[in-house]
Amino acid sequence: MDKYLLDQKNYSMFICKYKNVEEMKEAQIRYRLNNPQSKEEQKIYWEQNKESISEKRKQKINCECGTSFNLSGKSRHLKTKKHLSYLESKKTTF
Ligand SMILES: [Zn+2]
Picture (cartoon, rainbow, N blue to C red):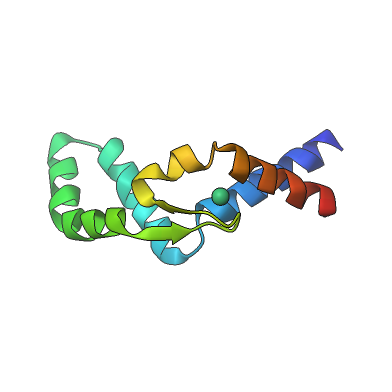
C-alpha cells in the first residue's frame, strides 16, 4: 500500500517534470552538461545546444498546478507550497 502511494507520487512528479518530449530532451541535455563523460564532451554539448538552452530558459512554462515559471526556476517551483498542495489534492481526489 505504501509502495503504491509512493509510486503514484513519483508518477505525478515525473509527469509534472516532463510535459513533453522536448522537455525530456532538454533535461537530458542538461544532465549531460552537468554530468559529462569529459570536459570535451561538455564543451561539445554546450556548443551544440547553447542557443536552444538559452532560448528555453527565457520561456515561460505553464505548470499543471496553474502557475507559470521560467525553466531556470523550475526545480524551485516544484518545491513551492502551491505546487505541492496541488499534487497533494490530486492524490486525494484520485
Ligand atoms: Zn506546479
